[in-house]
Amino acid sequence: EWDGSKETPILPEEEIYLDVNELAKDKTYCSVGAVLPSPSHEYIAYTVDYSGDEKYELHVRNLRSGVDVALKVLDANGGKCGEDLLLEVSDSIEWGRDDNTLYYMTMDEQQRPFRLYQRRYWNASSGTNESAVETLLKEELDELYWCDVSKSLDEKHIFMDMASKETSEVWFLATEEEESVSSSNEENMKCIAPRRNKVLYEVEHAQNRWYIWTNVDNSPNMKLMTSPAVPDSADQWNLLLDSNDEPLFDGSLDTNTFKALESVLVLKNHVVISGREEGVPRVWVYNVDGKQMRKLEFEEEDYDVGLLGHYEANATSIGVAYDSMVTPTQSIEISLSDDTERTVLKSKNVPGYQKEIFGCERLHVLSRDGTTQIPVSVVYKRDTMEKVKNGERVPIHLYGYGSYGASIEADFRATRLPLLERGMIYVIAHIRGGGEMGRQWYEEPNGAKYLCKKNTFYDFVDVAKALVDEWKWTSSDMLSCEGRSAGGLLIGASINMAPELFRVAILGVPFVDVVVTMTDSTIPLTSGEWVEWGNPNEEKFFHYMMEYSPMNNVQKGRTYPSCWLTGGLNDPRVAYWEPAKFAATLRHENPDNPNPICMKMDLSAGHFSASDRYKYYKELAADYAFLLDQLNLV
Image (cartoon, rainbow, N blue to C red):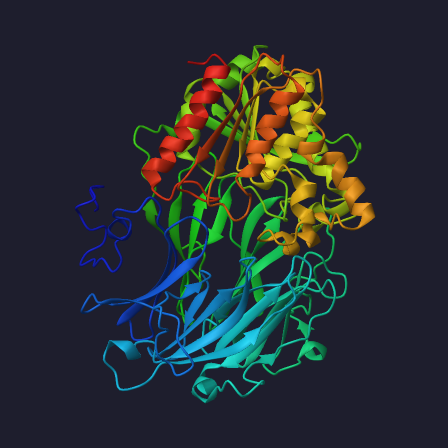
């Protein structure tokens, strides 16, 4: 059993293939993206970002010799360019059917992955007799569409996925045909189904069939369908049925259980489905031969569960990561033939943690519309909740996100413990704009996108007011809030709507200058975001966005909470000037505000803060130091 020390291997006969600490030596930033073993396992390909700007180098390492090759830009003859330029890629890469072939995406000026390349004999420069051959397989010129490359689990197909927030298209290349691709052949790849407006689909392959999950025909929570593995197959898509000829997932708006499909893992004899039900992540296992589907059950009511990485199509078991707000993460192996056969492979070790002194629960707050129930996840020390039950008000930290259909799970974070140990309650508001309750929680007309985006902010403020006025757990002078990125937009809009409701606000890399940023398509990522927020160059969106954009709605003569804003100089997603402008605006409009407005800018990081975990903890410690100081808890 592993003793927890860094010198001791975790597994018997463990070998280190890639030591990120070595890569990061003498670097102010180092983030590894993809790491993929070659088909023979003689090499690994990996991508690495040394600045935080999410532009990656592509390296291949020989696991026997340790030789590490950084791929370079090629000239027309397959040789290195005169400048010996490093190849710049996204973090989406794949191996072909052998060790000679790599696939990768390059980006345009807005850092949008848009071109898929195949490189044969990538290691030609390191002593082989072949010349490297680079072939552009496909490009996507529509700036709304982002692209990535993947490989089917059975390794028979390379996929290029092209998707906006609302429409997608998938192209494929059979790996057995990859040696015959040519730059003069415009049909190297074939389309599974041409794009249709507001139709999303994703694809996996097994047993000569496509497995497709899609919102086609007004099924927002995703149907699960199959068809023969042929090009232009849309008219052959059929629902996957159980033994009673009932569809496994029909994608309908089920307002009783809010059941939704999110992703599919196709194995030789089973289909493993990840999704949501009643706001909680779920995993279902479908037996292909018996046509029976069963849901994996867990003891806790509110939890987070998701599949681990799977690399073998003939697997007889699956791995899941399981945790809750009081249960540290466990990696569990589950038999596909009998899901009661479970082995905990590893549990996260949290020194000093005593699970029995903490509690968690899932509650609901009624939105101001009088019908929408907003799920709320709560974690606390039991003695703190006893104070609340006895009528005492305690400090509460409220967290939210609410954009892109992304779900904030009721998971375990050891970094919350310093707050809980000081008598705070930690609350996650699962507000609209996320995906916790299915696609309808996100999309128009009742979700929080486009011209109903304000529902995100209304829900968050309604939860905060419930904590103060309805539940009487806390008071405004003890209530803090936090959000990052689009969650920073949430916090900015919420404190504008109700400045005196909060005592402290943390805005991490906040997207607060919404209209100005979305108007300028030269800023990285902007164009693709128009199908999330709307394009302010159109009048209807301009006026609506101006009504909630934090930069344009700071109220004068009001007492704003103490604010802590952070940014990263190399951030390609939310430019560093957004938190700087918002901090300046908050100070300018309310010069007599007694509460501090502080900004902290990291000059060597991007959107995701420090890559060094210890530096990350220092950054988080600074956030919490400000929070606890302003709440008089230190």
